[in-house]
Length: 493
Ligand code: DHE
Image (tube, rainbow, N blue to C red):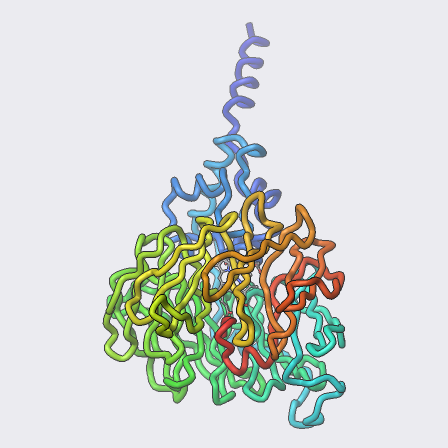
């Protein structure tokens, strides 16, 4: 009888042992979301960063993965109670609340070089304005390419998980980039050396550089701050707490330079506001919206922003000076406006109109919008949801990837006048083809094969014939100095 009782107790303890959420986190989540849930390649998983994600949505995300991200589904690996325990765990406040304040930022700064002592001319022969950087995600490197001949000049390691577009000074000499865990690096492209590094936050979205080249502004998810640095040596100028009039704080989705306005514009993730932050140190000007903005696009004159929220069905057009919503955008799915491009399009009456096109992270379509009426003029069906759309002033084509799904190896080439797909390239069957960048003249189009043993494929941008392949480790974004500093209409800035 005694033995039976022990056995029953043992069995029930086995049957009802609660999953150890912390151990599950360490096994399945830590490599992307970092120790202590502070975020790295994946976002921070702390209650304050999950303000807009409800618990059932978190369970679904863990089970099924998240579209448009690198988050896989775990339902085949974990039992429902393990998934549920993980969801509880991420909403539990950490034992020691994370902080990253002005003192931490200042203490983190590493000055590698005094840029003033370095020669003010390139150490290479290539055209410094036609240099293209390739970010290799696979082993965290950057390759610097000579854009005339598409040959590497140098390849060097970066910090872990660089994300988003590096930003250049107007002369193309210095470039700044951010990692997901908050490091901002200043690199001297003419001397091919790191100048300085500062850690601005625990989970950082991106960085913008003022068009006067004097300051750098970083957008953080954690803490809820914008951090302004001196562009010369990345020393701290100011930590701007992101708190609305009602006292609620917010993560910052992204910040961009708005050069004709002499200001930066930041989209907030948890408060329906956009902030305009003047270069000259005046306080931010909040623009109150009806909906949150996760992602936005400037019109070429920087008078309007076209924004979309992951949770609202319609996009919005905001007039920046008046702070008013002047139109709604009928977009559908999950448009990736940050990856939008513009060009001049002739309508059936021969009239030229400026149009904007955006890929879609959820549906297989590219939407083309008339920028006078803000109405969609064409929805181009694609082979699946895409991440990036790119073109160049000198090219008649826009290149749209199919990042998600079984056709991820296809790159659509769209005629910018007929608004039809005129070619489907499949550089390597079964391997993800993504993100296109051009050289400064629009002669070559570079496609990333986003695989560990991937490649950069160089196409003739006119004939669409492959010219060469450069082996690379999971290459993702590519950034041409001329196109980025001259605000090419075919790329993001
Ligand atoms: Fe990005 C740019 C947000 C996932 C590769 N991505 C950006 C920018 C933002 C952004 C706000 C603009 C920054 C800039 O240029 O200053 N990205 C997001 C997300 O919210 C999302 C969907 C989820 C997340 O994990 O944060 C996301 N992005 C990814 C990826 O999974 C990609 C493919 C691989 C990676 O690096 O993590 C990816 N994002 C990129 C690239 C750019 C980018 C290559 C720059 C494009 C350019 O040409 O400028």
